[in-house]
Image (cartoon, rainbow, N blue to C red; front, side):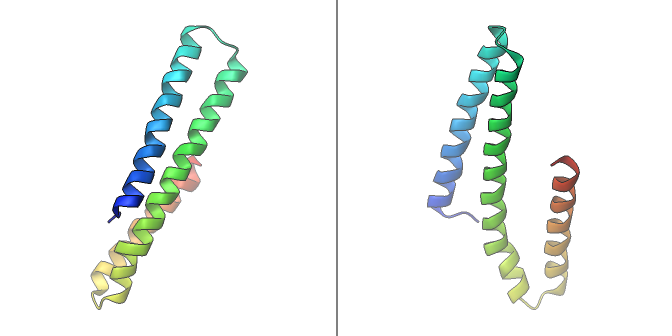
Length: 94
């Protein structure tokens, strides 16, 4: 679970990303140069990856760490499977 500072950081980053997306939509509506639009979409993608990293770090430091410290083998196995699934998906779409 995220603490209040982490939630605030993620929420602020997402708000900035929302603004960037609105800006890109305006650029498209205004027929701006394609390479300029692409530069902005790359920026949005990078910002989203930073959000993913923050959320993943929190998950690893809380839920996964708790599972690994526990004696619940099923919970440990589930957490490892979750992480492997996310990593595989990130590699496929990254």
